Image (cartoon, rainbow, N blue to C red; front, side, top):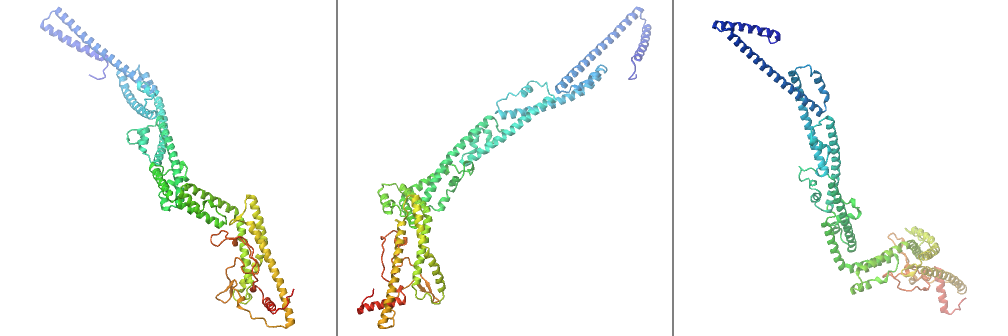
Length: 603
């Protein structure tokens, strides 16, 4: 029988087969001898059995159709549900067009692969949503501190999986990206806070791990499986910790600065060696730094502060034992400064009085030392204001030195002898004469400057305890007297020349007496190795000269301790025969001889 035979042909062939069989059955019955009634009865039963078989087959076919229809309907409903959940409603339109035309088995065969594909796609979509959900839950927990955030998307996703569309997936991905960006910003901020805490803990010498662990254990990074807490509570805890550490840094820094200042003061007082100072160079280095610039680890630790405090205590005890020595040393420095600046030091802190006060215990050595330090500062300030006048005093004294040298040079009988070095002395003499002519102007200008200084400062300008104006006035008076003395000597020489001329007219000329070595004196020159004469050290005062002594500030100063040892005085020195010329010597000798012979004096 053909597989694709039509139903009509099948029915005709079946009918033919049944007729053949029926005729064969009737023949058998006839051969057997069955009656017509029995034949009709058996034919009726046969017909009834055939109908029953047809009826059963029809029912089975109807049930199979119903099952197929139900299966197709269920799968179509599931496909529609999946398409709705996945947001792919357009895929169902081809099935709707072919739904009425295709048999049930074809419909079932066509919808099954689509259903399987949709089921696979749904499962993949569910995994995507689950992965995004887990990431959102984790990041949200990190941001909120794992306080079970009330996220609408997560709540909807956990209740029902009715919407697995790409639109909703995109919303979740956008939400995840936003949370990831926020997490990155928060992690960066937490890292900045943690780095600042690490820096402050290093400077203060504190345990960094314990400090951040007190804020949140996840910041210690001891447990790599636990993610870093980046909640607002963590930020607040880190900010409070940083503020507390900064406050502690400020307190310790100020404390260490005070201690370092005491160290410098004690080192200066005790003249501590550099090696001893280098031990605490880290502690003293903060004096020139601001708070943000202090980054060296351990520089503000309690150990560093305790060591510096112990050094201050040690030096303080040592200072008490050496304070007397320091007081005397600073007093000596004060006297040296006063000696160089020609200022009389304060007698209240003299060596004798300072020793007595310290030994008696009436005065704290520190106060006495501070008083001497103040006097040193005062003397230095006063010396600065006196500098201009002191420079002019030095110029005046140098001019006086040149004047004394010029006097010695003029008294040298061999000054014009041709010899090596003579031209040098001659040039110096020319310059000295120019300088000497400027002395009156120098003195007058110095007096005016001094008076202006006194008027400005409303105090007397003292030079080694004596008023400088008085010294200058005395100098001017002495210089005037010296000029008058020179004039008197010149007049006396003229008279002596006249007497010598008259004596020669009466008795005739006679040889000059031999020059005696007693009239010679050592001049201000000495012979050098070439036989020429070079000037020796200039004299300060023309002692033994034919003029009164010039009173300069150096003549007021003593040679032993720089203080005034004698009162100013004017002294008229005897006539210096060495300073006279040859003719003057002869005239003087002739005058003396005439006096011995009883010759009448000439007026």
